[in-house]
Amino acid sequence: GENVEQHPSTLSVQEGDSAVIKCTYSDSASNYFPWYKQELGKRPQLIIDIRSNVGEKKDQRIAVTLNKTAKHFSLHITETQPEDSAVYFCAASGGSGNTGKLIFGQGTTLQVKP
Amino acid sequence: DSGVTQTPKHLITATGQRVTLRCSPRSGDLSVYWYQQSLDQGLQFLIQYYNGEERAKGNILERFSAQQFPDLHSELNLSSLELGDSALYFCASSVMDDTGELFFGEGSRLTVL
Figure 1 (cartoon, each protein chain N blue to C red):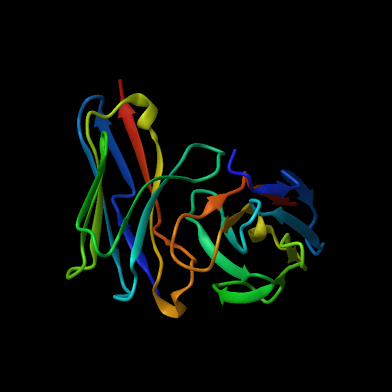
Figure 2: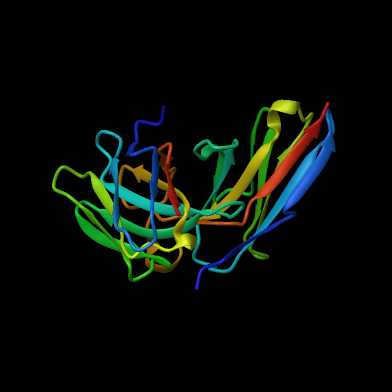
């Protein structure tokens, strides 16, 4: 079945450093890859997404890269700030059944130390 | 505010009981998705409805069922509750059934004692 693996599970960086979170997906038919940020007790919120016809996308301090051949995609956060501390989830959709459902990775807890 | 409304926000009940969680999608959205998030766990896909019809099914237990009504709101029914069912249940919606952003509600926190 569809599966998304996410690493690392926890990540601690110093304020101003960069953070990288990596995901792999199993279904080669997947074509949409969003990243969600979830603060404690809150709902997940989309921060950036990428489609399979694009290799890289950037939005200010956040960027996502996609390698379709290797079925890898990564989130890059530069110049991290304490407010970036949260749980980040990668996801994939468009695979089996080609529905809008998202299959999520296990999440990465990012801690940015001041 | 995502525009997705979930009720109740919190629910405490006993093992063996049955509860119903309700979700109203964003205005105009036809797809509704249900996810379960247990403590320190990820977002597990349960089920998707599109315009009243079941569209996709994940690892949803037989004790759980859902439906989407003609006004597009959805309900998730959880029966014969067990301690392990304690979790945050999220509803999300999207305009159609194709790939794109899902908008999440604030969730319903279920505690089974």
